[in-house]
Structure formats: C-alpha cells, structure tokens
Length: 190
Image (cartoon, rainbow, N blue to C red):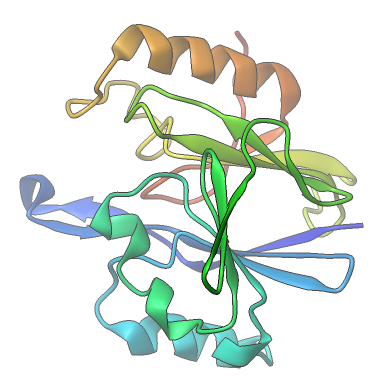
C-alpha cells in the first residue's frame, strides 16, 4: 500500500512573479519517491520538510519530475543517489534508460504521459493510497495539468487541446489530484 504526503504546498503569487511548486513524497514498497523538488523559498524548505517526516536527502531513492521547468526541478541536485524519472526516460548515474508511459516505478506507482502544459509532461499515478481518510484506498495523480484547484485555464500551456485530453484521461482514473502549485483536491466529474 502507498502513502502520499504533501511536503511543500505550492503557490502562485504576485501575478506569477513568485511561485513555488508543490513537492510531494510518495512511499511505496520501501521506496521514497520525491516529486518535483523545484523552486521553494530555499533548499532548506524541502530538507526541513523531509526531516519533519524522519527522512534525510539520502533516504530519497527516486525523483519524478512532471516536466522540465525550473520551478519543478531546481533542487533535484540535493538527492545525489536518486534515480530520476520523467515522461520518457530514467536517469541513473551515467545511464540514460528508456521509461515512459505506463512505466511502473513500484507496484502502486506508474508514469502516465500527460502532455498539454508542455509536450514533455507526465503524471505520476499512485494506486492503493491508504493515508487519505476520506477515501481509503484511493488513486491519486500528481501532475501539472492544473496549477491549483479552481484554475482551469493554463496561460502558458503549449497545447490546450492536449491538456484537456490529458485531464480527461487522469480524471477517469483517479480520486484525487495533486496539482503543480497547490493543495491536493478531490477530482470533479467529467
């Protein structure tokens, strides 16, 4: 069974001049997966949040990035031994390996290619999540198909048609969404 913890809740302020990506910890089958260790007030924001959950940077064995914008990737370098996954590849030491759509990182954690915000976007779909009291077990998608709950437009989307198609795909499979810059929210009807 998997658990999801929002370590750093993201935001967009001052018309986009100040942003912080949502940083999420996924734990499954003995793996500690960190999603989008990007822009925060400073690297200590992420390391302090990990420490509050009894973890150090060396405990993170996997990094998943939803897309390659700096607000989602800036502090990846804090996790020196972690494998990095994105929409198509796995980066492990000096190896650049194939990954991609439907790639299972753990038994309950899969990658779903979900273009729209950028053409290289992906969602991390986590099944059998047991630590969300409202719905146990449930399925959660961590993605940048939404900036935050209630923001259905995306002024920087590369392809809104693809983004809407990816949203429909995610909404058909999940109970909750962790957006790129906000708190987790329960999915809405298609």
